[in-house]
Length: 130
Image 1 (cartoon, one colour):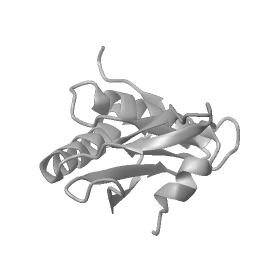
Image 2: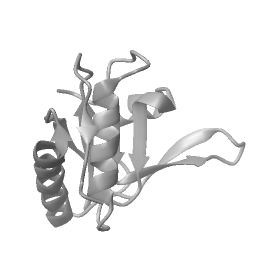
Image 3: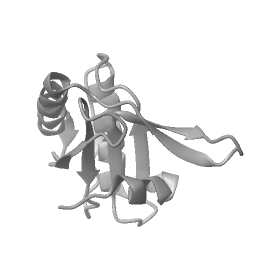
């Protein structure tokens, strides 16, 4: 799948969730909750994207734009594994997000990790035990 970060930055915010940092402990739960909601797709928008390593900010004129912080290669692999495991263990019925890893356009030493959740006809619930 070819995902264009610049194109994603232009999409409606209901379909794209930006996560600046993919390394803190609660991020996996937050990502999987969002993927589960996108799979439910109550607004019938076709699912959605969770973009890790980037955040939405305002430019000097007050318009939304995206800042790319990126995630280290080691953290990318760790986050991928945790999210997939949570999707299988804590979402019923389970979901399998499509995962795309892209170069950070602002820093070649880091990556941007994108999770795509396709909408389904089923009602998904997320339960992590908390």
